[in-house]
Image (cartoon, rainbow, N blue to C red; front, side):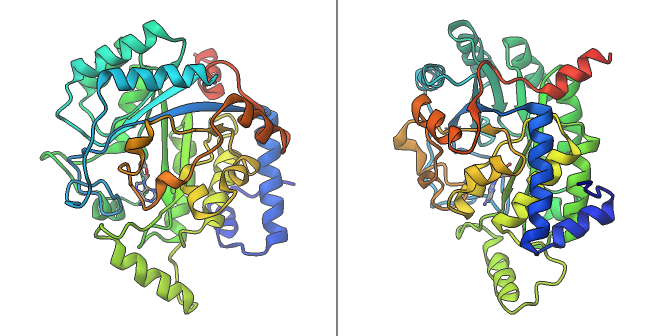
Length: 358
Ligand code: 5AD
């Protein structure tokens, strides 16, 4: 079936609530996924390196202003052990993610990246927030392959409200994504679905931005309210309005709406790598499988040492959600719905096409 991907068409799908109609959207996304990136599910070991962050994002539980958050940072040897574990488990990539922890120098990171590249065959993905182009260039030289930086919402006014500037600099993630691409990184971005104040029209704009940014990776998850954040009160109001059938233009932070965005992202960006996210699994049991059936082709099992996991609480109880981790469990689980674990690095099929056409 042809899916209408005009702005009006996309908006229609986002508003769609009929399960039979939605099944058509999901089947189309699944078919496009199979044709373009196949049945392999690429595995990325996620290392939550530090929950120290200089930012004050209104949605995020590890924002600097959350005095209740106990802070941690992994030692260099711990990061390396996580990477070795990811390789031992058969994953092709390690993702180093953390808050904007500026007490760690660019040199330090360069050393860690170099060591991982020397000691493993892993692709290295960084997800370390908004950094200076010089740092990003240095890390690319050290061997980093990919960078994840969600633009969170394509509505500039909403973005400024939920993601205040920091360090006296205007936050321009779209510009940084262009810098990352120019530096030679495979570039990933994405959004939360259902942030208070986010409308259907905003979500349409987000989906179209995935395509115009020509992303290699697209991460999408429902917004999950964290009680120790400024947006929490608004999230409660949105939920109350939704319960009264009066949500208006607000797109709600449901697993279903996140799935619609995943499916639309697949249709708009057939060759991109799209993870089925932890946030989706937190919003609905079985969410990892659901995302993979509706357009996603990547899973990011957490390889952070267990003692730190509860502290990386960007939303509540995140540590309770995890995909299977061992190669055997992953193989059995994926096979149960017709998929196979990816081998090798799982590079972006989109990046390969882009390189060919140059
Ligand atoms: N709910 C859902 N996703 C969140 N993120 C941060 N806080 C939350 C939350 N409360 C997402 C953001 C960020 C990514 C690492 O996690 O999109 O870019």
